[in-house]
Length: 364
Ligand SMILES: Nc1ncnc2c1ncn2[C@@H]1O[C@H](COP(=O)(O)OP(=O)(O)OP(=O)(O)O)[C@@H](O)[C@H]1O
Ligand SMILES: [Mg+2]
Image (cartoon, rainbow, N blue to C red; front, side, top):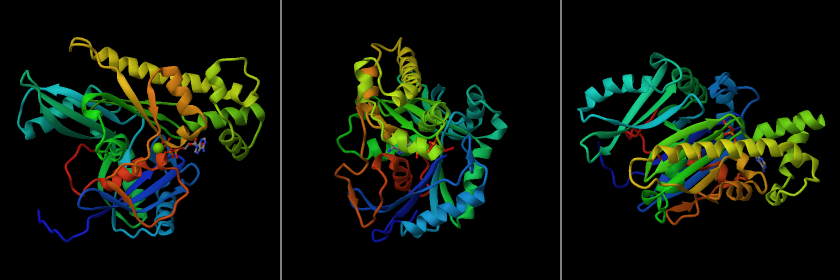
């Protein structure tokens, strides 16, 4: 490795979602990060399905357009995977050298991956040694078609891929790891990403990913319910949804507002599923002293922009809900760029851009 004190490290992150593609460019400074480009573009219709890019050319063209609109020039980028087929687990394994671990990890991962191990990319990272002499190992696995389709899309945009990450790892990097005031090392924190199709829940316990789960409800579930009930076009339903406010749901009174009545069952199902995930995390803690509860939820993703949703979630779950701005902490300086995106939608792309090239972190 060469050390060049005068070189500027500039990296690009591309977050390919079912609904939006977000891009960010971040430069490392002496004591933090400088954001030099940000932007987003709508994902071409039906070009991403169940996390797989089914039309890499259309997505590649959209990425290219988005980078151009955001005045980002780059030859390589970091991307990520997410969703129900991506597995992240922290497991205990006997202490062994790295090459032996690489072999055993395939057997270990076979217990968790929904598809076959042969059809998955599997990565691992040793987190540390436990008191009993065993190693704590983070395993990340992703279906090959999901990874390869994303590589193909970025290739079609004319860029190389430096790293393939997990979306939740990227969000953790930009929101928590980069924040000098974070208290993640002593607590259990949840990162909840409400996207278009799914809501991805991760629990990070004292700095280690201990649970990830994908719930098949996202912002589009609510739009679809409005389309079906009121016979609206998707655009009308989307506009209508954005003008709603969930705050009245907190008082549990009789619901006068018809659109709220239509989406409430879905919101409540999402709350139930999130609670189940957090309870599962809690139940896993028994036998190791007093169980830790999740103390904070970092709520991100476009679906979290529904007015009143963060407050409603906090009320129903009895947990503090933070709607984080990745640039709010002192380690970030924000350069020249313009975007109308809400920062909550960009934390994955920013976290991807923060990742150093070639750094051996857990990746799919
Ligand atoms: N202001 C808003 N109010 C309510 N919902 C919004 C708002 N802005 C965006 N959304 C919703 O957010 C969802 C898209 O979120 P996001 O862009 O994070 O998804 P994605 O990352 O493309 O999807 P996925 O994570 O499922 O791949 C859509 O369902 C959209 O309706
Ligand atoms: Mg997303």
